Length: 377
Image (cartoon, rainbow, N blue to C red; front, side):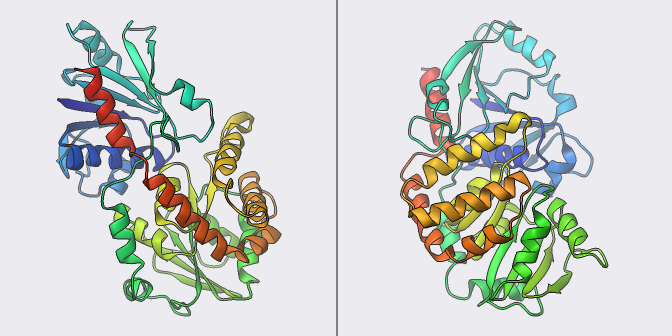
């Protein structure tokens, strides 16, 4: 059975990051033939540099990739069709699905959420008004009653290898950083534009301990460069600011980014893909939720914190909530960072417990495969 996975990129790398990881896992761990239809070739190539420079159908790492403009003409004979994040299928493809004698299993892979209501909606079919075909809503989440989280079989083995002896020394050998040491406090920064960033950088500069912030190329690096002033930060640049050392990194491969998360004491992440990867890294983290109108994103943040902080000491939970709130509302992060930083050891231990707890559940790809296999019996 072939699976067709459709992705329109809204968040620069979150949507395609999720879809690419899922497609690879379905191929390599579950033996599915996957065709990934994507509309933003530039974002795809940052994630999958082996793709052709010009958008055209290709095979990369076992996944067939098709530009969105060609998706409508693709033969709609897949046994499973996944519409990622309600991206809406091309009309020609949808018409071809409707004309089939036996329609495929059609899933709408929703955005990840910790909100309680998703458990009641997960796995429910709904008639599509345009085609009359049933489409099932599949909600990734943090409980057994949800769709689970993307987690490859080797993710913890790779993490533990990176966190082993000399992990930081090996990273520094690859990314030479004057003034940085393996003993410094390490932070990774991956965020959207954020009004709280200047106060956070000031807090880092005022830190009582040396602090190294690793910033991959993109929005976050441009924003940090603007706050620091002077010559723009470019890849491989290093800048000192009080106790803070900023190191500009290239855009990292998925494997290298996972390694960076595993090595840092605190990870600032954004969207969905890096949010999940930070949890598998089992280190303290701060989530920048994709901003939505009417503060919907803040409700998602609160729902996650309510779950995550259930077994966290009150003082640690208070510090975590305060910094996350400031970071996601553009508030002053100086005091929030000071309280959070003083508890990173406890927050790191809790992150490990949380990761181990989630690891006891089935992952997203496995739940998808079981659902589809049951549906076609």
